[in-house]
Amino acid sequence: VELFGFTRNTLERITPPQVQTVIEGFASQIVDQTEEHGHITEAALEGAQGEDTGRLTIEPGGQIEFSGAHRRSLAEIERELRHFLDQLSAIGEANGIIFIASGFDPVRSLDQQSWITKRRYEIMRPYLKNRGRRAWDMMTRTAATQVNLDFRDLEDLAHKFAAANRLAPVAAAMF
Image (tube, rainbow, N blue to C red; front, side, top):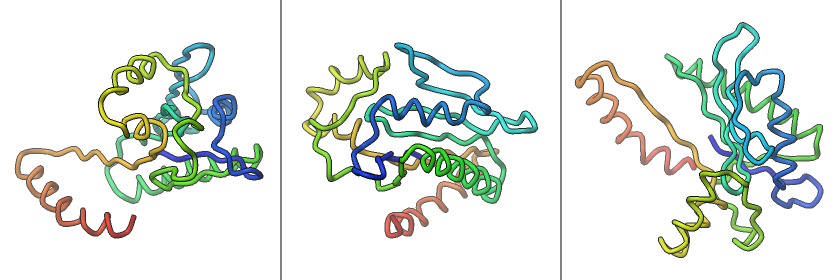
C-alpha cells in the first residue's frame, strides 16, 4: 500500500527530509536498509519476536510504500497492515503529518512535486520523459494498492484468478 504524506497545517506534500523523518520513526524495527545519497530509501522491518513484518520503500514523489510480509490469511494481513498504519499515524501525529490513501494527488501540479533522490529514479525519470505526458504524474502523483497472491498448483491458480476477476468490479466500486 502506498500513501501520500501531507503537512497537517498547510496540506503541502511532505518534503524529502520529512519522508526521512517518517522512515526514521520505524528505526527500532529496521533490520536492514538501503541508503542512497545519505538517505534511507528502503528498509526491512522486523517485529518484537524477530518475525518479518514487511518492507518500507520511498516512491519517486515521496509516497511511503509498505509491502507486508508473506501471510497465509486475510486476518494476518489485516492485523499487520493495521499495526503499520497505527505506527505511521503515531509518527505523523508527532511530526505534524497526515497520511492519505487517495490514489492520486489532484491538488499539486507536476511542477510542485519533490522528487526523491534514488538511483533507480534517476534512470526512470529521463526514460519516462518521452513515454507519455502522464508518465511523471504516475511516478510522483499516484499512490496505489497492489496485491500479490501465491498459488499451490494450476488448479489453485485457476480458482484464485477466477475469484480475483469476479471481485475486481467490487474493488473498483469501493475505491
